[in-house]
Image: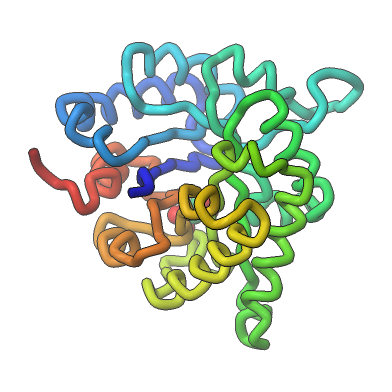
Length: 259
Ligand code: 13P
């Protein structure tokens, strides 16, 4: 049984004070159920870099994990505007989201750069959440699997088999992000199954079968259950609905509502 992961990507929202307030609310919602929930799932929040110290403080004693939204592949040096993996680790960050479609499409990050970032964070013993996903145009011309498999293979090209435990993959169709238009569970499962096959080629069957594959793109408390009921969908990467404690807590409880 793979553990599930529910991750909130706050994107460029919530400064330190707001981060503290949201985490306090989330803890009021989730702490009483922490032992129950942690049996089969992990919960993670990924604030903007500047809010990570405040978030780390607010999470003290909680089982909620702390993530970052990017990281450089080197650990120090002349890289204006970048943050090193070790700097993140110093605040208790355990996971780094890499290759998000906003990094790819707004900031022009290439498959090659993303692959270097993935290898860089894993070298520092952090977990990489590698995001892949096709645009609407790519889906319409039947190129979905070709695109996501290329992104997956390039993203993982420098990851050694023994590091498969540090890999998480998130399938986020670009046309579903922030649009209110979710992939159907069947559409998502089809892509996840292809990702799983490709991971088996790269890492071997058993290690690949342990890698959590998350779905992201307009996930809500209403649609999450049907998504995670699919065999290869192991959780969610949540944008907008992770910015409110009630909706994120409801998503996190999917399939495990009460004791
Ligand atoms: P939304 O949930 O707002 O569609 O964002 C998804 C996403 O990009 C998470 O990384």
